[in-house]
Each structure stands twice: as structure tokens, then as C-alpha cells.
Image (cartoon, rainbow, N blue to C red; front, side, top):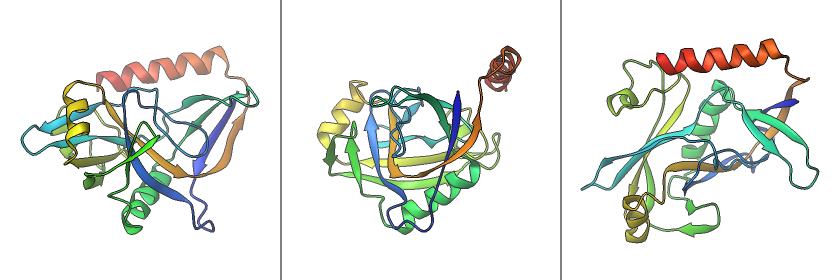
Length: 195
């Protein structure tokens, strides 16, 4: 199965992350990225202040995709370097007030107020809130001033962040995974879950 690394095309003025969407089921979709199906935990870190914290992108996490037009199945992932560049470009482009719900409707009253890359899993702010984040993960904290969205958070209708943006494809590999490679990936998941 094809494995595709998504990268920033620095020659494309549209490249990068345009908005953060709050969604019920996070995962990644096609070349414009929408975390929609893979569980990425979101925490309400302060009920009074209406702050939400969670991962926006996780490095090297292979996300299964299926192109609905061609029925092609493949995996996508982001490198640590691409995640860092994309997170910086997001703020440099002043997109921290751009928010949507379920990638369908623009919403007001949502602002990214913190943004950081995990450098040390034990000493990172995310670990203080119970996350077991991988080095290179992009975390954000959003301020929610939208009552409708805050009610959806309280009703657990919103469970994660999802990014919207444009990335180029870089082919990583074009092969069928062997049983040994699948077993190694499963072992890696268990080892990472224990640490």
C-alpha cells in the first residue's frame, strides 16, 4: 500500500494550515488535512476560562485514507519538520482566529491562544494535563467564547481538533507491508502506549 508524506510546498502561497476545526471524531483527510477519525484526545483544561487543549498534529502517525473518487487506499503522515513549519506558518499568517465546526461551517468566538511543539515528553506542559504525547507533536489551546460551541464541548459532541490546510505529497514508499513490518508496527504501538 502506498505511504505518502504530506509536506509544505513553500512555492505555493496557499500552502499551510488555514483553520482549526473542532470535531467529534478527529483523523486526516486527503491533501487538505482534516483530522476526523483517529482519536486525538481533547481536554477541557479550565471550565471557567473556557479553554480547550489538544494535539493538532502528531509526527509519523500513519493515517489510513481511501480516495472516494478512485477507491485507492493509502496512508499519509507528517514529519516533525513539516509539523513545526506548518505550526509556525499558521501563526505567521495570523490564522489563529480561523475556526470551523466539522469542517463545514465557519464559527466565531474561537481563538488559538497557545501553540507549542513537544520537545520533552516528561517535562512538556501537555504531560501536566495527562497527555502521553510524542516528541514533535503540535499542541494548541483554544479559547472558546462561542456559547453554542461551549455547550457542544460540555455535551461531549466535540472531542478533538482537526486542521484545515493544503499540503503537497511526497511519496515515502510504494509497497505492500509484510507480516513482519505489521508486527513491528503493532509492537511499537504497545511500547509507546506503556511509556
